[in-house]
Amino acid sequence: MPDSASKEQAQSLLHSPVTLGALRLPNRVLMAPLTRMRADAARVPTPMVAEYYAQRAGAGLVIAEATSVSPRGHGYPNTPGIHTDAQQAGWNAVTDAVHAAGGRIFLQLWHVGRISHSSHQPDGGAPVSSSAVKAKGRVVTADYKQEDLPVPRPLELHEIPGVVAEYEAGARRAKAAGFDGVEIHNANGYLLDQFLRDGVNQRTDRYGGSLENRVRLCLEVAEAVTGVWGADRVGIRLSPSGTSNDMRDSNPREVFSYLLRELSRFGLAYAHVTQATEDDLKRGSPGIPVADFRPHFKGPMISAGGFTRETGEQALREGWLDAVVYGQLFISNPDLPERFALGAPLTEPDKKTYYTPGPHGYTDYPRHQA
Image 1 (cartoon, rainbow, N blue to C red):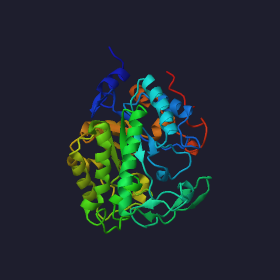
Image 2 (cartoon, one colour):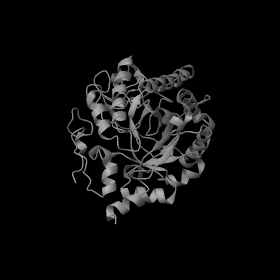
Image 3 (cartoon, rainbow, N blue to C red):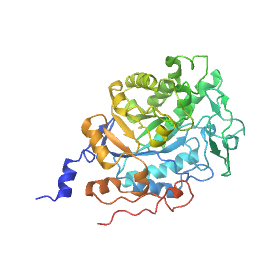
Image 4 (cartoon, one colour):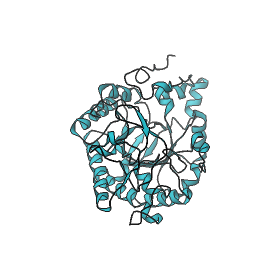
């Protein structure tokens, strides 16, 4: 007779296979895109980055960290890019390592918009956004100092096609680097989110004002990126209840329901819709349940936001998610799906090492020893 752990694994939806677009995944325990600031000074992923992701290849899908599609899309020190040959080669080493370990990996395409500083900008100028609306908060400069976020420069109408082209070029480089697909980052208060939400977007041209206008850039980026990859290898991340980076909207339920309906026509691999965090709720987030958005999207839906093994199983059983995305637990438990299957103890992450250089708190978390 199988023991209790074997019975529990046999009944676990987290450990059942699932199809997301073109990929058949062996389990539904997905790794979230996690900024760790371990790229080198040229924003190239190092061999240590490849080791880190290979250690976590047991995830049903690894969604690699947010990666800037252009030089002006950076806003933090030592975050990676996907806009130079060297960066592409660095990521190629990462995908080779993950595939050799039996895993699958997407790259998250990113542009920070106003959440930046002149020290990160190639011309030393102001970062760009939808509008000249300053975000509250501090920014880490290129030399690791903290300063107030600056007033951004609104993108001029003639510049916006160039931004779409940067996402397309990043998608092409990601494909050449051996990724299995890409995720468009339209969450957490970064550039595409800054066009989407009326708390930032004050434009009066075809990218501002009406809801149809504010979703336009997201849809143009989705069209460009799916043109490179095919829609079944492209996901998108949205944060309807997110307040990170001083984000707000007068009617997020309407905005994100509409956007998800518009995105449904592409046939994307998935929509990655995040839950409200405790911090979001403290900052006045409406805390809209992710399940409320399920009827508005025709494809698979995944979500991140503090799930445990038990709440992940519950979401799958209730049917409003197809897979569950885990972030901080994957930092300190590289073998998280195995630990879930065994009911093994979980290691708590050391938050002091999230963004520090070197292997400590990055590649030195041990696997479970039975």
